[in-house]
Image (cartoon, rainbow, N blue to C red; front, top):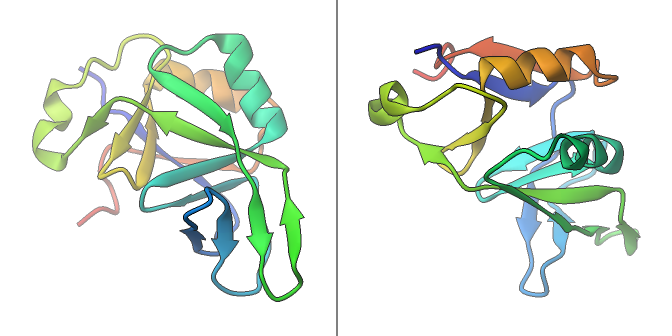
Length: 139
């Protein structure tokens, strides 16, 4: 079995807080980057979401998302919420079926891709994506 790859953005994401109305509030000033992740959410820019929809990846769902900047009272609708159905822990990583094009979630906080999906993403127009193999960096 090949290990999945951790998927992240080359720019650090500002932490977000999910409000009761479903919006995501920026917790501090900072850039809204193409891939934002935190506990319980993965927000991806619309072009990336559209690309994933075209691939028809099994086990994911995409929903509209709103990012709200409270201080400026500005809403951004540039991202979609990526919901990943297949979760794992460090103890169960060896049980993952990483064949095909799939996403996985570690602790519902970190996004991982199968090796085949990683290759597909690397060949796309998403130069901001970074990949690290397996659990390197997750001590």
